[in-house]
Image 1: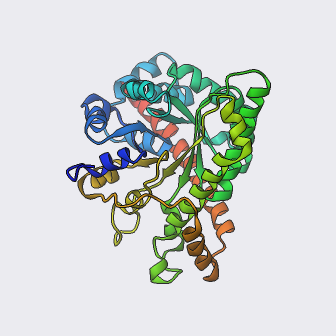
Image 2: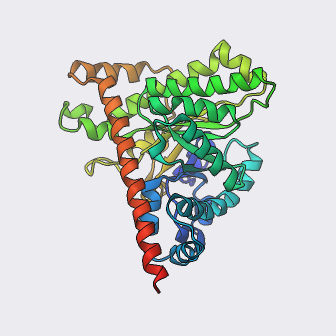
Length: 364
């Protein structure tokens, strides 16, 4: 391995996929995303309501498209889905050579269903089918939250053959619930004589753990909880892939649900801005990075080690947090609830922003 390689190249060479956690029309129009693919080993992209809210609100790149669609009588969620898919189709096309060369393992983009559907299994499934169909791209994941209420929708979407990015996972047990839903969906496809090759990723959120316990634990435990949860979950993922249950599905032609590290921008200004990216290099995993974190990683990131897969060191760290009185299960539930509520807030802000813009532009 050449010492002149950048950190993104080193991570890529060690089998990790780096995805950009951002999309804007400007990134597409000015060639920045294409450059990230060519120069920074970016092989996929994720989006969420907060990202689109910022993209549409900052500037006028979407104004003409909003004006045209509003004039055609489109509004609300339908208008947003069209706006988002205009961007995501273009991004998907940029990643299509990677999608093809990796046999559909990499080169994906992701779009969220409405977070207002979190407790509605049939509504979530219908929304996932709608986005999947309208995208007209094979390399688009539909994002469904891994909340207890949405687990049935994940299983149904997988059974229906829709590629799913399970989002808002915070703990190993939440990941296992999502993995179970994926397995059940694939098993049902096998039993029904359907193609078991339905791609999925499970997105584990990292940095919010450390924000939640900041100032509540000894200094040497600061900024270690998120990484320990990742280590525990990586071990569980490896155990799952070695299980007889998974081996049967793999023999039938199924592909593994990949583990994805999300929320990997450092929130603590006193910590390294590449803390979570440097520490979370592991073969066959994905790290989705905010643009600022990607650029920092390319500039001064350090890929010194790959993660341990036995989980013992991670468990020792988790045990120390428990000894400090941190209820990890309760905190995981709260983080997931807070995350779901934040997405609902962003979704409503986003639809209001589009409505306001549509109204103002139609008057011009």
